[in-house]
Image 1 (cartoon, one colour):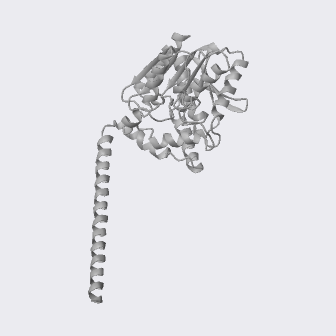
Image 2: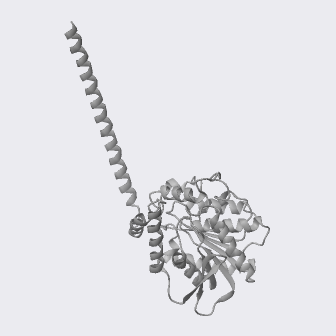
Length: 346
């Protein structure tokens, strides 16, 4: 009898073991099926990218891993500097490095006759974690050529080494320098791309909070305005954007806010989309159809219009994040539009 019970127990254990093995095999098959479906979906979505954007996506994926580890950031920052040297227009442009209240900066000017009465204060992009004067020189040079104005770019402190509000403090130092030099606020255009677009808006809001005069205009290229990451384009354009990913943006915003911050993502200090925008100057906003941050631009233009701020939104077809940097026809068209907008406002 005892032997029969042992055989019965062994039979049940073998039955349970076999059932568990079948369940593991089933789960493994389901997982492989999901991976296969996802691979096919990604391949189909990749087919929607133009050859140019496929190439950009391949290069960008190597240099922007989304990691904020020191060795990864060093590589990303070096890659951006190299990009700046390769793409920056060299003809008709000269540069003069200066230091403004302990902030490294650079004047970018046309060699030939140009408007010396007005200045473009340019805030570079880079997710608040990357970007130096060499990288900034790409769009600083294009802004000088398109507007005919002197352009002042600057190296604000970067996260995670120097999180919020370090960049805004540095931008205010450079703004104060221009005012000290006798350049009136109404003679300054503040421009910025990506995180620099966020910084340009935050600078205007900081000046407003201090009760001081606004710049005469804002020029924003693919501005990062909403750190909640809730815009519709974060999902709709995820596969189309050759430059940015959800994980990359999340890592940048986390580094910028800082580990000890109590600010919520919708706080206007981080997300100017939710700020009181009344009183801000006329604003030109440019964005591409294929970028994750498209909603940031569309929603900003809507919010500005609702708050009686003059805003012009330009959406460029089949273009990616800060496409104005690249030597392509749409970039030339966008920079020409910047020039027309600035001359209209001036």
